[in-house]
Length: 559
Image (cartoon, rainbow, N blue to C red; front, side, top):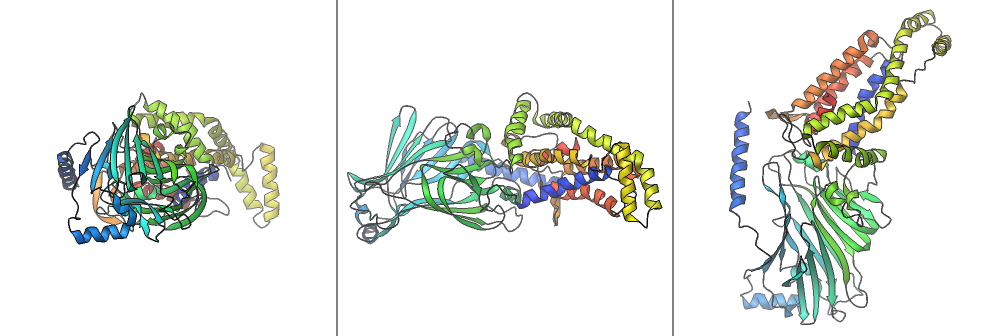
């Protein structure tokens, strides 16, 4: 379990940022066209296939006869489910939809078997699905009083559609008798991604054995939405909220499992889209599991991670009664902030500690304001300039310290030669010189350290900001992902199988910035003979790492 801890991505970010900061510390111290055509053709074909699918109707039952025509199969099935064989339901589906969300609920299990975003598409123009083709399952496991162990996924539910004002209501009932049933109730509001969900029973106190465990089981495999599955997998994660409002996460890189108490909601985040189950009555305990399904970058890979949660349920007064919510939608602050009572906005990966605070309350609203009247790429440029202006008092002190240290450099060099055999005396005389000139070797380091939260916050902001998703600028088609100017027929370790231009421009800009601002001051440094090499290595590291990172961040550093 990780409770707002640094992950491997954060560590890499710190390494890169410190590489740049070391430079400041030192200053203040003595065709591919064919491949593109194929991708375009593939997107065209897939788009045509998607268009050929029938449009979603108004809420309607869609019954399909199942293979229970065989009397033997019917007898075996009813024998297995005992009293729940009373139902007359057949296999079929019911559609619930509003302006932005499409849900398909199966009679078998009464569970959602398809969840589609109406207003969003993948990188190759395919509709965004969070649930499709059996990638998810939901069920209630329980034991009957005649010792049958049942799973609601195996039961048939009778659907009933009604209206509650403007809301669509779907009641799914697995019946033991006309007035004895297990009910899953869905209520969808207009223009909402959040769906009210109720699990309740009526008259089942004599059917369900409450002395045996009753558990909720929810599994999901994240469907790929981005052009780089490794990049998407980096931000695909199981997040959950405790009863005391603390947010925790499972590992973002490897397999992980935790048993937690007092869980209010579970979020299966798939980078920019999330599947969330929230409960009004917190789960007393929950066993949470995350499994990484991505071994390496692959254009054929379909899924990212597998998530699974098991939570015991309790019967009150001999009945089940849990009021919950399903959320299938974007991991977007503008959407999630509407559900303040659930605190769903906390599922957004803003970053750790103060860095997350800066992202949520400074950069996110600030960029949202700029992009409301400026092109998205220009908004980044303007934000970069304004951030630099805001930090100018701090950077001014850094430059002032640098200038003073350069003036003192000849005298420091003279002291070094004079006391080369007496390190203690050299140190004493050097400090006297600093005091006389009114400078401190650390006076330039402190301003640079003060800028660290800004740098790291931006490092997390660009790849996770929903406002940047699929927003283009110049040759970059998606500022939240890497830009591509050429596809390589092979993969370079730590670099990838493509060439991104913005990281190249940013690396070159930083390299020349170092050259111009450092001058001859980097020629020698007692105790640091390899500093010049380290300074030149930093842009090279940026070139490799940022090649698979958000192009918006590279644009920021380039400016």
